[in-house]
Length: 86
Image (cartoon, rainbow, N blue to C red; front, side):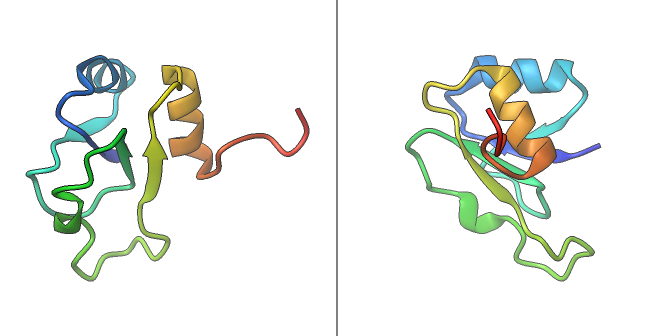
């Protein structure tokens, strides 16, 4: 299960990701995350991935502005923003 940090005011995104089975945390939490979902508030993201972990790739940053939940989930899972062949 992927651990995802979500900006506090993105309540609908948080709820949808939790319903899909993601471990969703707040920016005020610490530790390893696979993705950080935000729109404009970067405060708190320095709390993540500051430790030696098995995840050498780090966290993917997902700007949720104008994105549907299926687009956000695609970015989290594939670690890229879109298909090469649309």
